[in-house]
Amino acid sequence: MKVGLVGLPGAGKTSLFRALGGEREKLPHAPNDERPLVSVEVPDPRLEWLRDLYQPKKFTPARVEFCDLPGLPDKEVKGKAELLAAIRECDALALVLREFEHDPYGLGPPQVLADLDTLRTEFLLGDLAVCEGRIERLQAKKKKPVKEQAEDQKELALLERLAPYFESGEGIANLDLKADEEKRISGFQFLSRKPLLMVRNVGEDQVAEDRSSLSEFPELILAATVEEELVGLAPEEQQEFLDAYGIQESARDALVRLAYRACKVHSFFTTGEDEVRAWTIPMGAHAVEAAGKIHSDLARGFIRAEVSPWQSLHDAGDLRTFKAGGGSRLEGKDYVVADGDILEIRFSV
Image (cartoon, rainbow, N blue to C red; front, side, top):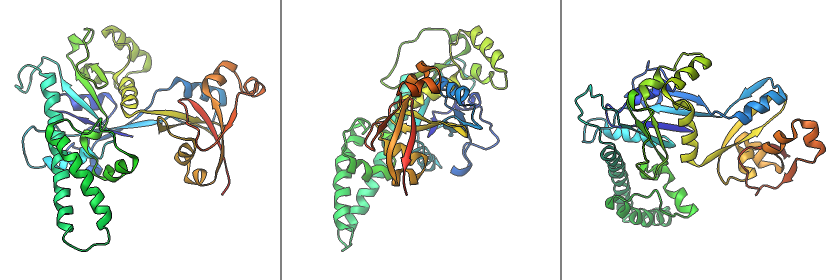
């Protein structure tokens, strides 16, 4: 899962990127395959408990990638289309908004809601341009005899239905689409369809202040310059540093949790002496989908999933007690995997 750090120039994205452990050897305006990325472990005490229980040779937490993108200009400039294209490649967008008073770039007082509106407007305009461009091409193809005419007409009808949502500023985030419609537009990577989370970047002297929520999106309030100073400190020193500012959880951990929440995903586990591992799947995913996440052969030859709820195993305290109490059960391919399930896939290929 990749989360793009998006914001207007001067919002503090790069400071946040460094706080996440990223290095800036690569420039944010570099080609897509060279943009700065940092991979962050998903904090999960349940997985750590399983590691202590199994003592595996290998321990593999789930991870979230964060991409530092250039500041998004609010006017047409060279490279803007390429930047929007890079943003589309992300699974979710963390909108970094300046809420600190310090003004080294002469930007004026912070205007969080105005900046949020600017970013969302840019997303909608970008989506509208993509939508209208595709509509024009499909309409031109109507005049030519092509094999894909029936499918093209379905796509055209759908895009003509979506265009007014972009034009009105509503977007399609909450639009109820059928599964086949969702699949049909997936290649466009519409920005207004992506999960959003707000990162309100405050000043060092504002960290402890209580602030009310400003939007319907998941929000995180932090001081990126403070969080940046945690990098390189030992865990105990990090906690002392956070305590001094009255911060309960590092931005690194909090942002990963928020990304999971925004993307509506959760984790299941696989265990054994060789490896204890966490896997990320969408909420509502079935057992056969989870099997495919591990390996395509497991999905292709799926027979049953042996399911062990983490909480039940934890309550039992050890494997022998858990198994003696019949804690595991067998489920079919349509079983909806719960957060924290431990799965062992039975398959045959």
